[in-house]
Length: 398
Image (cartoon, rainbow, N blue to C red):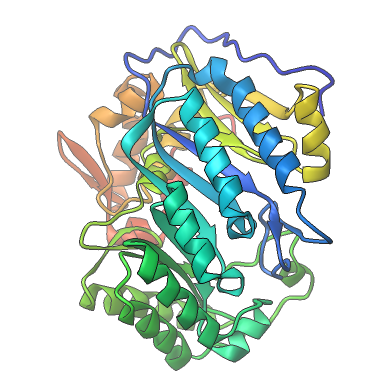
């Protein structure tokens, strides 16, 4: 952790933005009721009470300190992530949104998402979240099966999941449900039942994630019995076919939208837009006129609070090398089923498309993408072997 604030100036003379990308705000709420064994996010089990007022004050001060990087830029989406942001009071959410509106112009139709877990749902509280300005809810269901919920360390039951969705639908029109598959000892029929149940609610968005074992998690240390690769692949195909049959469009690797209600916040990530991350461990990608910066905040909430007070909340920052930009752009853009318009590459990276043409040629030759004079998109092969596709764009020095 640095002793002084990290500078925000750039040294590059090779990146030039004619117009800056759209800007999103991410606010990280790091507490949860219980740490799940598969989770590698910066989340911490609540012990005692959350220092809500202190943390809201720190988030506001953090935002204030970041203003020179984004001054005057319109904010198109806001995302409260965690952890479990719904552990905050509606008053705290209202205070944070008010602080944001007072410092940056918020688009009139801004998408404002709050993550929630079924084990922390209260009807009155969620009506108050809606009144505070939240207009999209993302609920971490993961499964409706009691055995799998227990294996995943979730604190809710299938009945509570149903109840949470009903409360959400009484207050919000735009709702995402997170579902996981390829769970410990999960059968194909059980995975199918979860997806069919999730789709039956008709929410505007579903996110279906293949469970992966990440380092520094309980599951990594004590590996559970997971479905074989072939079975997991069959589950993935089933998810795609089932949701397609229910009218959901698979517009990104794990994201499915009903009636065109895509997640605009995540779309900004995938189209290489900018985002300012505020809060413990939050990450940022900020384009300045002559370079692109990445930053990370102090990770642990107990260290983040005093760091903000001393103006040293940015724990790491670096200018993205020009040679890395094709890979960083494609790592996001090729997650989208429809790929990207070719003009977007220069708009969002500040370098000409010619820098990416050798990689695009190689990817097309291997059947990973299709393209014409306007657009490049991953093929089914490219989507199934996304890592192999992306490796083509790694800098030669890597």
